[in-house]
Structure formats: C-alpha cells, structure tokens
Image 1 (cartoon, helix red, strand yellow):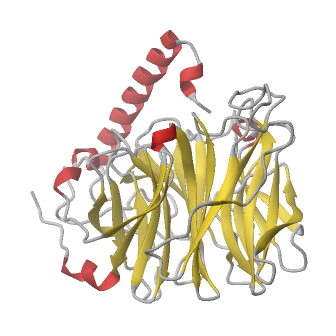
Image 2 (image 1 turned 120 degrees about the vertical axis):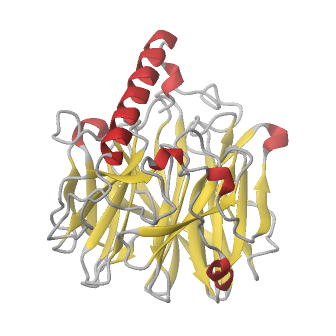
Length: 410
C-alpha cells in the first residue's frame, strides 16, 4: 500500500517512530558483537547474518557508496519513463534455450487499475524482443474505462508473480484483484501456460484463491513445491507458506509463518523469500515494514510445516524487496537494497553457508533501483531490477569476477 495515501501528520509520526525503532535496534545489535552463530535448530534466535572485520559495530554505518564495485553488463529490456508509466515486479527464467522476462506494466503509479503483465524473450539474455502483452487488460478496467488509472474497488489489476518451469512446461504466475487497496477481497493467483507451438500464453486457471506469492515455487528437499503466501488481509492474518503443486496446479496446503496484527513478533512482514540450507533445513527472510532497518529471519526444520519466530538480523535493509538463492558452486547470493536510508544502491552479498554473509558488493546505483530477481546461467548471474519503477533492467555479472572483489576494513 502507498503509505502516503494517509494523512501527512500521521506520516510524520510514523516516520519518527520508525527512525526511533531503527536507532534502538541498531544500538542493540551493536551491543552484541559476539552473538553466537545462527543454527536452524541449535540457535534460531541468533541475529548474526553479516560478518567480517570490515563490518562496523552498527551495520547501518556501512559506507555503501564505497563498497567494491561488481563489474556488470547493463541491459534494458523495457522502459516506459517517457510515458510516465510503471514497469515493476521483474522476473527471469531460462527455459528451452531462451531467456524469459516478466513484469507488471501499468499507468502512472504501481498497481493502479488497468495494470497488465507483459513479457519479453531473448536468445542470449542481452538482446531482447519488444515487450508483448501476456495478459489482456483486466476485467472492466481497459483504457477508456472510468476505473482505468484509478484506485477503487470497481477497477481491477494484474500483478506479475513469477516464471515457473513445472514438469517441463513454462508457466507465468499472475495475481488478479481489485485495485482499491493491498489487496482486494477477490485476490487470486493464476497461471498462464506457454504454448510453444502457437507462440502464445494460455490461461491455465487459478493456482490458489486468496493468495499472492512473492516468487515462483521452488523445490523442497521432499520434492514438493513451495512458495510464500499473503492473503488479501495479510496484515491481520500474517504470512503463510504454500506446499504442494505436485499432483495439480491448485493442490496446496498452507501453513502459518508469521502471525499478523496482535502477533508476538515486532515485524510487519512483507515480500518474504526462502531457500534450503546445505543440511536440508530452510530459512526465510522478511522485509520489515515496521521500519526496523534490518532483515528478519526464521527457520524451519521440518520442510516448511512449522517455523521459528522471526527475529531481526544485523543485515541492514531499506524496507524493500530482496532475492537470493544457492549457486551451483554451493555458495549463496543475496541481492537487496541494503542501504537502510534509500533504495540506492542494489548490493550483492555472498555466503558460504546460507546463514552468514561475509562479502557485500555494490551492484548498481546512483539512482532509485529496486525489486531484484536473480538467475544463474552458464557462469553468469542475470539480475533483473526496476529503475525508478519505470524500467526493466538487467545486470549481467560473470560469477568468476566476484572472486577478485574484497571488502576492506575502513
């Protein structure tokens, strides 16, 4: 939700409260420099997530502009800044010899009525085809409709939710709901299947009612698929974990991860991600809309059926979307807006165990950059992100180049 829809005096109070909370948490973390290392079972409450002799006692004081720079090849897939439109919610996948990109495309402000989902494809990940419609305009909200480019319960919107290769078939996940708030009561997650013979996307129906995911499903160690879930009233009900997707597209169980309003965690959880650790346990990371300025973390030791209460880590965050996963060489990568003051720059962090990151690099910045999604292909990382919420861009990174970067103690 756009918080600036609230009254300005209320925003002043919230900003002040957020700054106080962030400062208090930073002081607490600085007072615990010898906190024990995290473990999903033995020490799930550890706050340690960023370590190294280069990390200051207060991680918020990292000079993000002076981090080592990752060599990148910069690519623009789509740009609607001239039209003052929206390009946001970027996703990538490599399937059947081609790269695919997916994103939300709307008028004026993110997630207004009439927003559609578009896509593009590329043979090499560098040169991309012109953007095309994946969805049509949402019901009752095409250009010319009184609900287009508005935020009201009569208008509808599509939101891009990821690219998923399931049983050899390419699926695009898309949420549909009313455009009044976040989210509408009719919220549903739908799948569109790529018909290669016809070179078109076909609606495959509802994946889950009353659900919006964050990224496409990933395989659990059990062979089941899993993805995070927010319901239309998730601020009250909390964040959940969907497990299933093996027998049918719409076959899922949902388990709680973070309780909502009135819960026992000082966390306003948004846009969670998860990955499997080397020992098969799971970890989940959460953006915190309570403005703590840090990523929160939880663990599961039973393939996502139950989760430890999320705790604030010492990894700084700008209250923005993040993404990460395990590389083929066993290391973990995390791309996020780690500067707590603004969504600039995007940084790339590396970890050997998926628990503690000891390297942090500058990826792209000098402007508003956010909403990353990362894939690995043939020795390269392809990092999709948005520029000022008006462009879909990719940073192509040779993984071998990361070995030459080193954080220096200030």
